[in-house]
Image 1 (cartoon, rainbow, N blue to C red):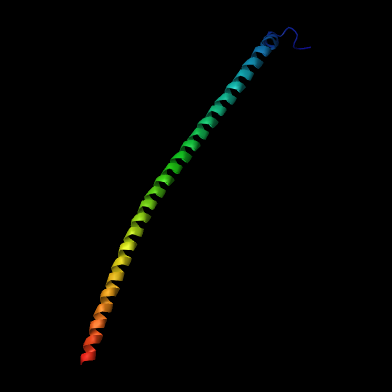
Image 2: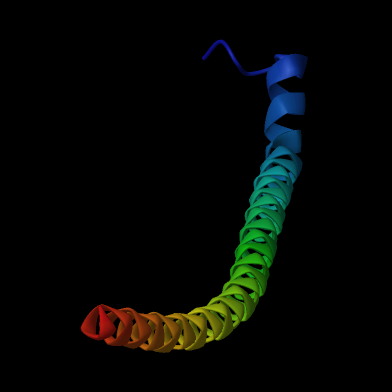
Length: 102
C-alpha cells in the first residue's frame, strides 16, 4: 500500500479526530449564529407589529374623538334647522294673515 510510511497520511490520520471535533464545533457555532439571527428577526417582527398596533389604537382614538365632535355638530345643526323651520312657519302665518286682510 502506498500510504504506509507516508508522513502526510500519518499526520492526517492522527489529526482526523481533532479535525472532526473542529468541524462539529464550527457547525454548532453556525447553527447558534443562525438561531440568533432568526431570534433577532422575530424580535423585530414583534416590535413592528406592536408599533403598528399602537399606531392603529391611537388612530382609532382620534377617529372616536372626531366622530363625537361630528355628532355634537350635527345635533347643533338639527336644533338650528328646527328653529329656522319654526321661524319660517311663523312668517308664513303672517303672510297668510296679511293676504286674508287684503
